[in-house]
Amino acid sequence: MPANKKLLMLPGDGIGPEVMREVSHILEWLDRRRIASFDIGQGLVGGASIDATGLPITPDVVDRAKNSDAVLFGAVGGPKWDKMGFDLRPEIAILTLRRELGLFANLRPATVLDPLIEASTLKPDIVRGLDIMIVREATGGIYFGEPRGIETLPDGQKRGINTEVYTTSEIERVARVAFDLARQRQGRVCSVEKANVMESGLLWRQTVTALGAAEYPDVALSHMYADNCAMQLVRNPRQFDVIVTGNLFGDLLSDLASMCTGSLGMLPSATLGAPDSSGRRLSLYEPIHGSAPDIAGQGIANPLAQTFSLAMLLRYSFDMKEEAALVEQACLAVLEQGLRTADIMQEGKTRVTTMEMGAAVMRELERLAA
Ligand code: NAD
Image (tube, rainbow, N blue to C red; front, side, top):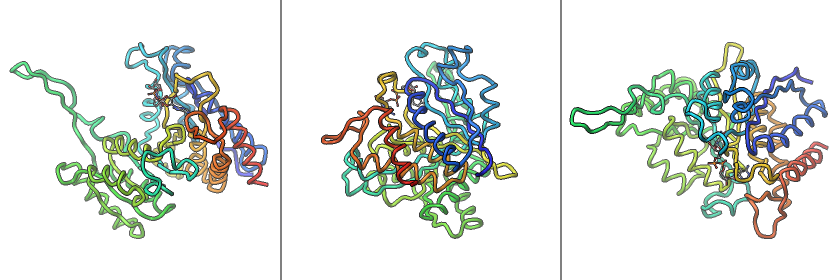
């Protein structure tokens, strides 16, 4: 059996701990079957950490995250902590982890599973078999660029300023993530910016083109303006394999792509840092949904986004491609059997709780691995 893999689980608030519990059964199963051995730590983040320590995340948890091979994050936040000052809000936990771990590449898959094809607001013919990976630069661009702020002009008006800034090294490192992913997928990258009206977009296009030609001649590279990409994502989303883009456009386009799939409770994400000299990369995996305070404590949350987040973790951090595929197949099989949590319930299907969905995934794992 391979050596212990260090994993830090940070369940957080609301439905975070509920969906994380189901995922921990899968890790125990992998351990029990001697497929992989995990050295699993747990920590508090978000409101749970504020209640215990006064801080959304403590330096100790940040250090443990830095010393882990991967972090599996649940969700944070809730009305109890909504009145906290901005620096003490539960959501600061995730921003702190991204900053301290240098997690610059946000990976958001948008995949349409056949049993849930009706959940999309787009026609089935448009989204059947959809499988896109959006790679969004997550620590640069206009959300962080200087100068920024609101200033008062001599005539008394106010002016709000944000600055889109990218350096070649920032563009290259996120483009490398996209090219590497494309090699494991269909071998196509579409780089998205506004090179027609923004100098930072022009540099983005030139840098990605040069990198592609120098290091990834085997990957088919295309370019698209962000506004056209938004239109193409609803017109013909299957034309895309990997999309790479900056922070602002990625924020919008990844939400748009996720709605092609129809359900928030189904979608995972990953955020990756740069590899060190040994090839080890800090990384964090989390569902795209939040802590869902409206359904927390009722045992009805959909655990599949957290489960797909674990599959991404196995694939990208632990190089366990077969096990990742096994977990994904188990989820698909459960959906094919007609089991649905409330958020994805359809007529004629069987409504199940969080725990029942988790147990069904475990049964399928046993069957598929038999
Ligand atoms: P949300 O994603 O928590 O919920 C939106 C809607 O989707 C709700 O109706 C919820 O019940 C439903 N939903 C979400 N996940 C579900 C699941 N797994 N199963 C079934 N239904 C699900 O977004 P929100 O309501 O805007 O935010 C709630 C709290 O979560 C806020 O405090 C927000 O700041 C926080 N939040 C945290 C993260 C994070 O931790 N990364 C991300 C987004 C929002």
